[in-house]
Length: 71
Image (cartoon, rainbow, N blue to C red):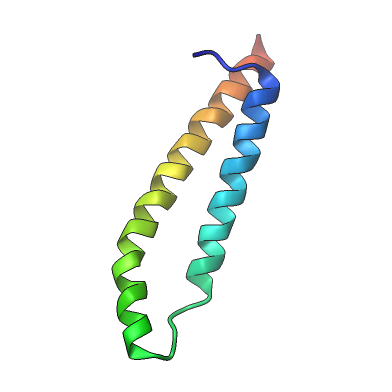
């Protein structure tokens, strides 16, 4: 599926927003409640995977946009 430039820009912006939200979540730190901390730590691995996949997709979209600019 080929995306047009506007679709790529919208997807890039969506991914950048998602990545910023993940970073903000990390920066809040852990909850003071030990049970909440356990849940947060369990979710941290999943969140890390989502962040990694989002960053990779964002990089791919940015490359496609750069390629469009050079054509």
